[in-house]
Length: 158
Image (cartoon, rainbow, N blue to C red; front, top):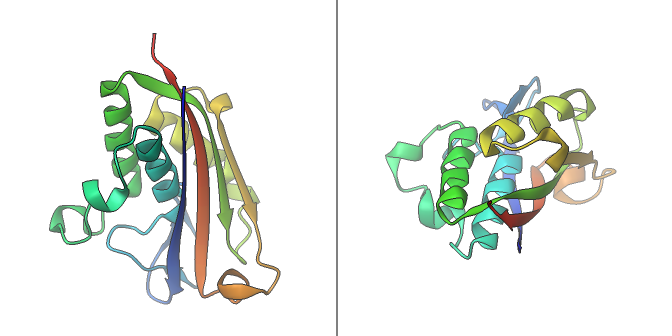
């Protein structure tokens, strides 16, 4: 078994879509980044890379490469899933947390879990997604950005 963890942060701004866990969420602010800036998916993908000792997202999907500009981050997660399979591992479980003041994430959590399970080719029962607010404190609470964290346990594939 191998364990990985990651944190990703993206700035909130006007004129961008808010995409988290592969779900486009109605919001007056979206996330700034080279891809779709899906901080939750980025944290999950990078946690898997970490568990595999393969470095970080910037190494594999650099923001200097036009190939990844505006890309749906679920594609990045699928690429990481292929790396995981190639190394002989599968998801034991993935636990994710997104920190965002608003909008509410509860209506979107199930779809996020389904998206992750599909991209990682695993049972949805192995995927946990949670959300919390900043309670008006710090960059999350002041709606300046979003932070996401993920912890993953990988098992050897049979």
